[in-house]
Image (cartoon, rainbow over all chains, first blue to last red; front, side, top):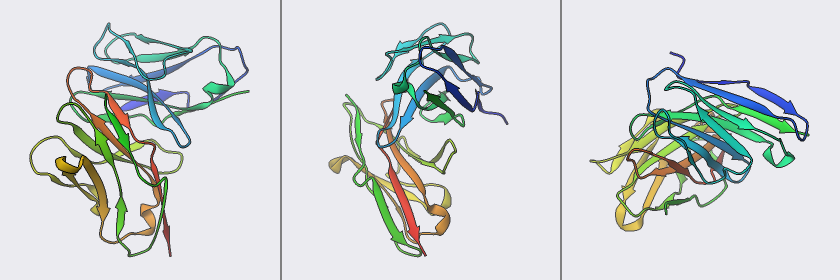
Length: 110
Length: 114
């Protein structure tokens, strides 16, 4: 069972570069989420999608965009990366109270 | 607005000792409550959850938590710590519904001393 799959697992970007983090789930869940994890701050919600075709801002959306490509896929885009976006990014999906998480993408912006 | 407070960013216990990780929440509606565990360089794994019904919830690896509405708490306990319990633990709250957003606490890093 794949669950929630994120690519890539690691990435180093230069300031100003752009990139897209990919996320796919195979559990037929309606809701998908992007979180970032920083030391001492827990996980903070960047964007979420309650259903295919809808997206909404979370707690820390600035500098990010998302696309809910279809029910399975939810991508996160950094248009112009900044060192403050160095973090570990987690994608999650849910159908009901429990959320299932991917293994994370460790992003470093230099 | 929902929020979660985890008291103690670092907790150290001896192997075999009681583990107690504290979590308090605020929510305007009856909450769903969760504990997740994260081992180094891994994703988050659900330990246990409270949605409705019995307020004492048992999870994996011998952990349990009790929902106390009057104290707005959902503390995590384990009677006897094992070295393999060393990890970071996150408490989270959700109001459910269509969006089901999880709001996380800042985490507690548990160290287990031999």
